[in-house]
Image (cartoon, rainbow, N blue to C red; front, side, top):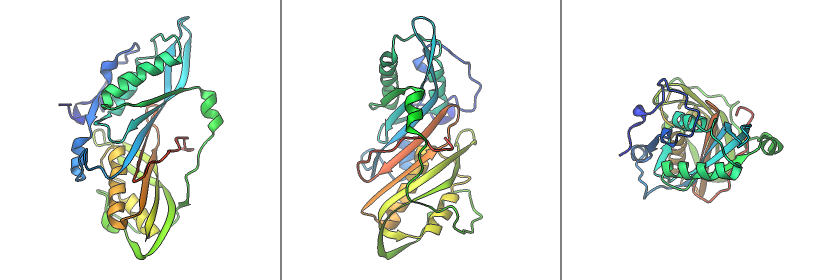
Length: 276
């Protein structure tokens, strides 16, 4: 049995270890959070991926010269475990004074260690700054709903009762908001993100969606579970032909987390946003 998140390095003073130490990785089972949402590994109504991007990846060449790069890690949404974010950062820092012959050797090691921690194969890309620069900064698809007028005063818990739709009108649309905020369930630190909702089904009232997203403002949960909760609440309301929900969270400690959940197979765009 894996220890709880409260036993992780989050919120605790940690020694900086600069040589390869895979034991720093701290897996957290997804099952308890799935159970809170009425789900299990066998009944997940979505597929998807959690993209983690590392902007502080560095190692040494055999000559002793350091290299910097950007790491992209794709963790399957149905993997048994997530990896606690501070332990992830500490693990990546442990590569700083470690020698690798080339980028391929580093990638293979990352894939092995992260897949073992997640309990399922993790996709890994190690990319040069020039490669990522050439991609540019992305913008979110569809209509931004942030300028709509809403009235809300309760931020303690997500409020799905705020959501409304027009059941007699079927639409296909993409909506997004930059006003998503929640709190880390261990440290209480704020997590800032932008969220996208894409669906075909009963027309969603846009202002009600914005009010619902704002109601997460003081909610304590991990990034992945916030996106899964939004997905489930919209699925129950709309009973859509298809539904995709994803969030692009602002990085902390050189890492950003971007959960994608969908009723269909998708090819996510992992280019960073301006806030990331």
